[in-house]
Image (cartoon, rainbow, N blue to C red):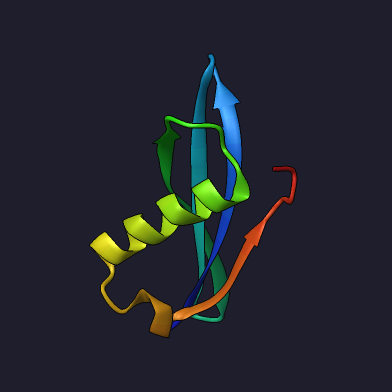
Length: 77
């Protein structure tokens, strides 16, 4: 199995978040789910958002690097 991740930095009510979506195939359909929104307590630069995402994945899916097909962003940060 494999999956892709899409992430986007956003701000809501003065608080910054890293929104993460996961996409994977199931029964010939592409599933697209909102996985989580991680609060960012610092300015949301690309490097900081990547660090937060990698730490989250390391803590939840030990061998996630073996299953990620792609990672995307809207590129606005």
